Amino acid sequence: MTHEHESLPEEMGEDFWNERYRSGERIWSGRPNRHLVAEAGGLSPGRALDVGSGEGADALWLAERGWRVTAVDISFVALDRAAAHAAERAPDVAERITWLEADVTRWSPPTPGFDLVTAQFMHLRPEPRARLFAGLAAAVAPGGELLVVAHHPSDLERGVPRPPDPELFYGGGEVVAALAEGEWEVLVDEARPGEQTLDGTTHTVHDLVVRARRLG
Image 1 (cartoon, rainbow, N blue to C red):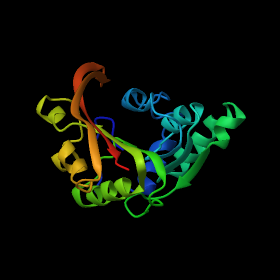
Image 2: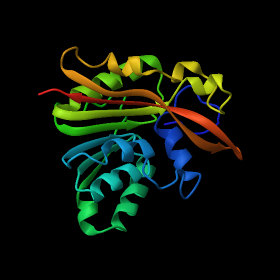
Image 3: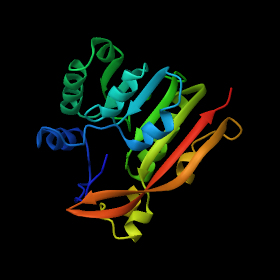
Image 4: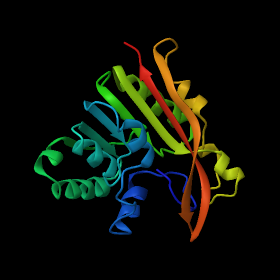
């Protein structure tokens, strides 16, 4: 995931992310992503897959609402930290989450098995991104939903401090292209505005939000 103004190495693999998480006691805010709260808050709990789960805020939010969550991340440092955060909550919350270390560009989730598949701010290069979207879509059970959130490419045009690599950004069409025609209903596909403080300056930013329901 990329959330901040920074230079990107050619390969953001396991070593990169483990070192990133070791660099501070908490890297992210500890709060669930606002688009997950907005889009999934009204869904009935079932089985959820949280891809790129980081320090676990989204997985914990889902588990506290009754979801059984498989939380996947490439960094064992992040997963250990997330499990520790879960242990601080009610025992039944921690029991609802399975923490799984995996490189999601190479790992295939069980298909179809999840009532909600969520991927927040997964900024990969086009080829692994296309494979990821196909795998996420395949993992959604009939009647389940897919939620993909990312920094919208328009942020680059507006001067928001983002990694200066347009290849890492994408529009909703790339996500929708991974959905088999006639098998999905696209509920949301928009660039949603908000505010984010970066380097001490508050910017108007836009996040891509795509939410789709698998028919059946």
